[in-house]
Length: 411
Ligand code: NIG
Ligand code: FE
Image (tube, rainbow, N blue to C red; front, top):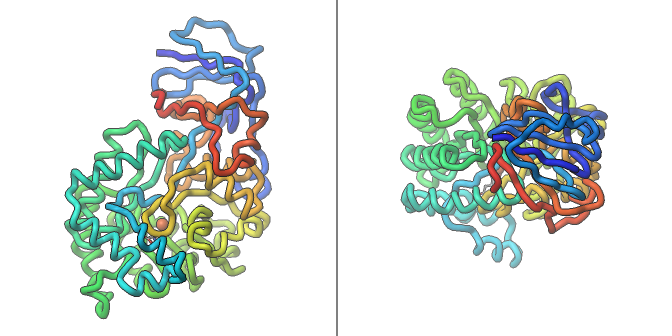
C-alpha cells in the first residue's frame, strides 16, 4: 500500500543519509524542503522530494496537504508512563508550601506511587497506562522510552516491565523498556539501603535479563537515594547482562553521576538541572547524550538545564517529557519543545532537533526514527495550516497537530 502526500508546505528534518545525532552549532541546522511530497509504503518512508521532482508514478492513495507542514514524530526518550493512580494530593501539598523533597521524606513521592502500584493488578495497570500511551500518540509522539521503578519489589517491577512489553506489542508506537529498580529505597530498607540494592542486583536484574524485559538500566543517582558507589555497582552488574545505562543524574545535586555515566558508556544521562563545568567537560568527546526534561523543571519550579551553555560548548541535547505522576504529570512533547525555547533559550531548530533525531539516539533508535529519511519508519506529524515550523514552539500551551501517522497508520 503506497500513500503519497502532496503539496506539503514544508517537510522538516529531511536527510538523504541518516545521521546519528546533531551537536553544538549543528543543532541550529534543521534541513527542510519547501513545496514537497512524501511517499510512504506500508510502514516505511519510500521517497520524498520537491513537488517539481515528483515522477507521477502510480500510487494507491494521494492526500493533498496544502498549507500544512510535515515533521517526524517526537521521540520521547525518558518517561515513567506506567504508573498507578496519581499524586494530585502532593500537587496541592506543594502549592501549600511543602517541597518535593519534604513530601518524599514523609513517605510520599516515589514510595507513594510504589504502594499504589503494588496494590494494582497487572490488567488495571495496563489499562491505566494504555490510556496515557494513546494520549501521547495523539500529541505526536512516535517512539517512547518507559521505565519501571514504581514497583520496588521483584514482583511489582516485573509486573511493570511486562505491562511495558504488552504496550509495545499492542500499539504502533515503538517502546523501549528501562529497568529502574533502583529508583528509591523502600521504607523496609530505610536503614539498610545496601540490602535493597543487593536485591535489585542479585534477585531482580537476572530475572529482567532472563525474560528480556529491558534494554536499558537506570538508577536515581541523588542525595537521599543512591550514591556514586551504588551507581557504579549497579551499572557494572547490568553490563554483565548487556543492559546499557540511561541514568537519572544531577536533578537536585551534582556530585559525579555524569562522570560515572560517561565511564560506563551510558547511552544518555538525564535531568541535568544542576551542571558543573566539569560535567560539561566530561561529556565532550563522549557518545553519551545529555537529556533535558524542561517540563519537570516547570512543574517542580527547579532550575532548567543550562542548554545554552551545553550547546555552545559543542554538546548535543535531547529533550524528553519525564511523564510521571510526581514530578511531571504530562507527556506533551509540544509543551516540552516550547518550554525549551522559552526557558532554556534553545532556538526552534535546536529544540526540534533535540526532540526528534537526538531523542531517537537517546533510545538507540536513530536508524529508524527521528527524521524523514528513506527506509525509516513512516512516523510523522501533519500540522494544521500554520505560517512556519517556528509556530509550533511559539504557540505554547497549544499544539498545531492535525494528524499523526505512526508506522504508516493514521492515529
Ligand atoms: O525523573 N527523579 C526521579 N524520578 C522521577 C520522578 C519520580 C516521582 O516523583 O515519582 C523523575 O523526576
Ligand atoms: Fe525520570
